[in-house]
Amino acid sequence: MSITNLTRTSLPIASKSILENKKNVMEIPEMILHKMKSQMPENIVHVGMNECKTVKISPNEAHTVFTDGLASCNAVSLVTKDKQGNPIVILSHYTPLPSSQIEQAGAIEKQLETYGACFDKSCKTKVFYNVPGYMSEEGLKPCVNTIFGKIKAVLDKFLNNNYEEKIIPYQSKNRPAYFSSANIFQFDTKDINKCKMTTVGENEHFFNV
Image 1 (spheres, rainbow, N blue to C red):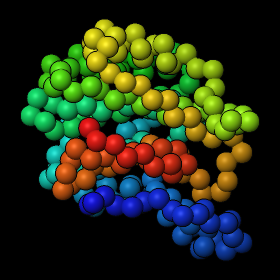
Image 2: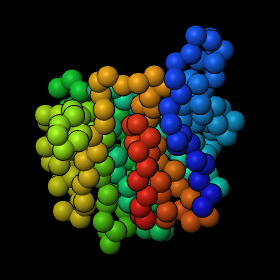
Image 3: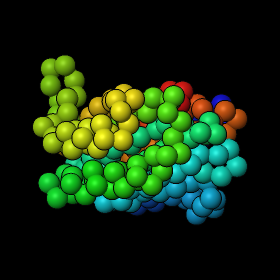
């Protein structure tokens, strides 16, 4: 599989050495991606805070889409295929403020208005919510969040129930040093229908579009 492995087996420990700490920072997945983006900007797309982008995936063009800096923000993403059979990713990252949630839903709606006609209607759209969570006896649970209802209203308007949702909470408090705050989508350049999604904390999820 031609996907760069960014996931670390363990997190480094903070050092008294400035040089060692700087090295550890540069090995955080999003830092590696920012460096790679500067070298091949046509292949890697970054989505900033309070931003939403649609990216058409191609082996020779864009194959990686990511956002970072997720501390208490919501990253909502849609993955589907266009009529030519190529993956399309809509990735958004907004703060948890009520006004930002309205903007996030509006931004996704605008992207669906623009690109929805290109979607392959026979392909069920995958919708991912990477949202702040809290630790319970059963593990991480999503915090109370009104973003789900706002996004669902947009999805129902455009996708006619032809979608599936997955909520992936992330640790938003008491995070260790060098913790990754990125949400990353990497597509296999040898088979672009294969995707590796890495969520905050470097949790890996593999799926076929």
